[in-house]
Image 1 (cartoon, rainbow, N blue to C red):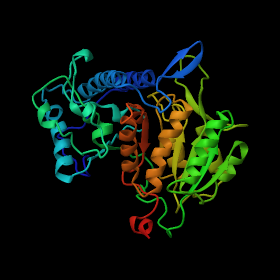
Image 2: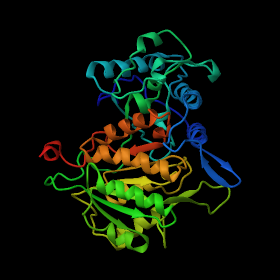
Image 3: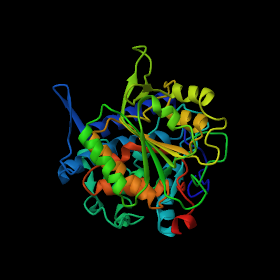
Image 4: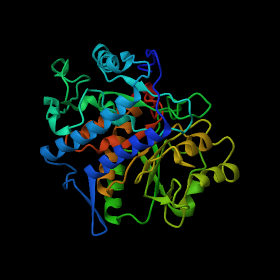
Length: 403
């Protein structure tokens, strides 16, 4: 669906194994652009301002484009030999952006619940070959805002050419990718339609993080702009803190670990909140024992999981946080990470995103703007954040926010 209209003659098709392969390749490329492990220690490849040299940034783009192009080719290959969709979809997306003067909302609908693990933000729809060293950089590789035009200013020069390296080739940068969770209810466009009171943010904080970075991060969130009502919880008190309809954003700022019970099986995830390891199973338990039923029926917060690989899944993942929070807890959506992130970079990225949300931006606008803000420093890690909600979700109605 593009801007709410279905126009493809046939849906995309991909098997679970191929989807897992693509997701693993994409996540590996993102992780390698961000960090390296030396002597058992994780070290960031970014500088103190979370930026990179232009040459290093361009190399990251080349590798990501190669992975994203492979995914695009696999998705829209047709056993009948009809290449209409594969060849015309990019032009249709750019036409929508040009006509409307904004990035199109690209909604992904998958009728096989929880079967495909895909990084849609990484899809690259410009035609390139397998040798990324031959890609020719578009001028937009250097001129990436602000402001960010809805269409690449040099898009006419791309026509009929192959091996063009352009940020607008990535769906996460050219579109607002909407991945609505399956919740068996009408998804929310507003977290809380009530009075224009201050936005309430509940932060569930892990105690194994770098204390200095944690203090600075929350000091910046408290000071704004925009400012918000910020409460914190940790350890066993998190279950009770999540019970009432008292927050607009539930923000998990903690480490995320792998729950490996069988060597050959896919791992689940847990959040390290200090004193407890919170798993998706815990959310189900609290929904059945501690919380009211229904839970969060009127004020459905957006859940933000700002830890390592919090929304990383494969087709074999048994339990994940997205359905647990949206189906069982009643959240309006979940935003999380696909790979391991250094704490300082994760803090900065979320300050960019939350400031936009608190200022009245939609979830789609906030994530899109954050990705481009990071790209301005040669940082591609905005593509490692995935939102499972409607793109036009806001914390308050537009009129209420203005008042």
